Length: 110
Length: 115
Image 1 (tube, each protein chain N blue to C red):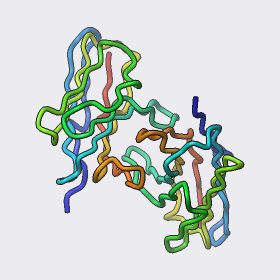
Image 2 (image 1 turned 90 degrees about the horizontal axis):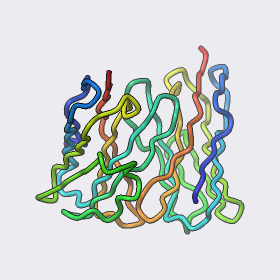
Image 3 (image 1 turned 180 degrees about the vertical axis):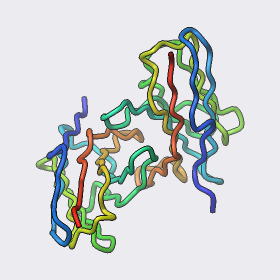
Image 4 (image 1 turned 180 degrees about the horizontal axis):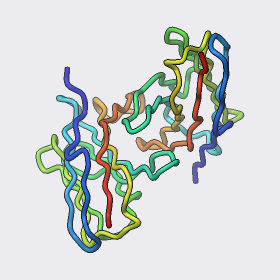
């Protein structure tokens, strides 16, 4: 059974800092891995999707990597801003369904 | 274009009652997914439709939960004899074709509270 874990559960950083969020999964038989952002009381916004055959994807200040052999993905956020404060969720796609981690709650202090 | 929409945004009901939650996917998307998110947790998969048929319903917790998508567009999640433990945010997502390369796009969710 696929299990997805995110570390840390919460992170607080000063504005401008670069940071890395971690995601690990137990079963490497995945279609893709997707990173989402969730603001309080809101739905999920898709940030990046990495196909199983890819190593990384970039969008603006965000870069996500995937290492299937070690069961790990990271989300790198460059030059963090207060507007980046939210919960970040990773999800492994197995057979069409997403298996989510519990999320990392990020707070960027001005 | 319009994103995934869900109605109602909030639903309060009493234990034992029946509820229906509606999801309108992005126009043209053939795959539709239901997830449930409890407070402080990541979403959990419930069911996945490809067109009108349920491709995977392995996440439905018990037979009180049922979902339909009769015309391959709008879907309704139905919960019978609601229990307090059913309280959660119910999220719907859609993707273009359900293929392994597709991104899933989520709606804002329906917050269900069972008193």
